[in-house]
Length: 274
Image (cartoon, helix red, strand yellow):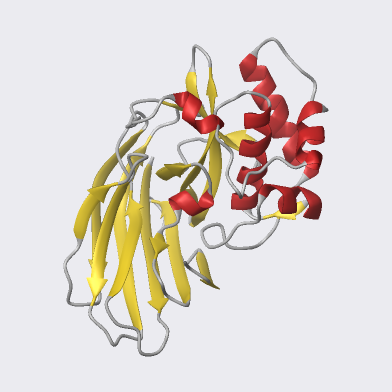
């Protein structure tokens, strides 16, 4: 399946800001089941993009804007060819062993409620069955609501308590519970395209012995299909934020659609960025 993506972020800065440094994670990598056919990253400012790779193997770009500046716009656009791998992720850049993703963060800290939720799930000798059981239980416990997937998703404890969260908050609950149960789990940012409707989205990957990494979208209660484009990986949503800077807030516009369908604006939102 060919997915066309256009992602625009307009970053507003505090009045009088000078020498602004920005890091962007808006460039996907090819791997088994995902081939980036073309991809461009553009700015509306006269500055140079410096490509780099972060600790998790994500492709990043950094740039500096000489102030005073009120805003800067970043636009990523391209086409990605995807195939269904039944959620199994192979061929990715892996700078760390899977055990690193047992590490909890402030956003995935397992509170007593999360521990109780994870421990109450029926255990299975088959790790893959256990992972699917966790996904189903979370899908039933926390419903997906509107909200920013890329700005500031709820911490795992808050999402479970609210029983409603955006895809990023649900992914935090999944990774927190999975790590408590002894499964390495990590946070993924990317895009979901279904016909002419799509959006930026977060989900999780869990490491299953003898299989490897498997992608789980608990909000939709399924493993990732050819409708998903994987962008960045990290321990939580903060590590995969598409833009990190000292700005005040952002306006995002995202289009992600099947290449056979006419593109349509899928998501427009204001959010804070740090």
